[in-house]
Image (tube, rainbow, N blue to C red; front, side, top):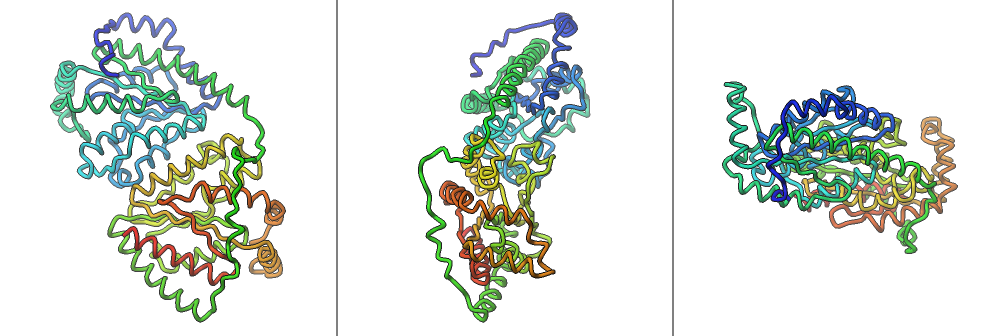
Length: 492
């Protein structure tokens, strides 16, 4: 793609100002206001060669926009602990609210190149271009607009711009830090940039490669492209919202799954054996948590299951063996208004564990293909797409040294009814039972269909589902503990 860029474009400062004053400046401000009014979240990526004067391009554009509606980020400012988390963690956490803009002076592309060429030297574990494509597709499928620019320079112009920067900034210039520099290895970086642009130039998030030889010409092309592409994205966004169809909760495949019916719920454990195994596995887990932390290994332990299936009890037996400073339990309920404003995966990425720590989820991202499906909260096209999105997300976590243990706690309807009634009769536990629990129980067949499909489509080699026979709580708790211990031992 780089060889097709016309580096001869020139434009005077006077002509640029004339175009901006005539209409383009007002159009930049207006399109930002239009996006805000419509609730379109926008992500602008401004990548390119070092010394391509991207800050000048960006700064000029921002003069015509409302600073309250955008936030500028750079991966060069990420602290070491953020670089050591799964590659896309910071970018998920920095997603814009509806109608707002996140603008990247350096983005996931800069971090990818830095990871490839410098790796552990800068504390970055690179991802893959395939994961980058998947990340961007998740966002654009979720109605985020992504505009990507690459500012191209000749080696000669890059060196000239470097000298100008050194002269303009004086001694201060030498204190400016950067993750990597390409000036002395232009051909090597040229090849990799070109490969990267080709591999990630997709219909949903195409690249706009701009000549940076002349600053004014680059500014004009970027600003005009922003206005044109945001108008196009805004029209598509409104059309998509208008065409959203009511959810049916039905699968897009005729294939039927029958996993839960094969679970043997007669399994039990006697109290004496339970106490022995509880001590054994909790003692082992206590040691493994320390070994995992020393190895930089993290864990995500996810619990799903029927209401009253025993998730809370299993979690308590797990955490009883852990150092409280190194784990966090994240209870998940219906998303609040803030969480609804973001992509459905956002609220889980903000709880991704730090290196060496454990994140436990009581209910999870799988609500997308269960509750949201059965209760018709989400258009069919959205929850049907979620199976692949979730698999992709978990693959990224696993590749970043995170053990993923997923548990479905299975009980039968009679056992659930018995536990519901016990809760109603016990003043200390009556708070655990609500009218919604009984209402959900009435939809058992619909949930069973959804759970079976979920288990079939999202149990992978890197993040397998473990079905826990839960009619006997003692048996279930030991199976959870034993599975976590074995998964940590295997990964270590």
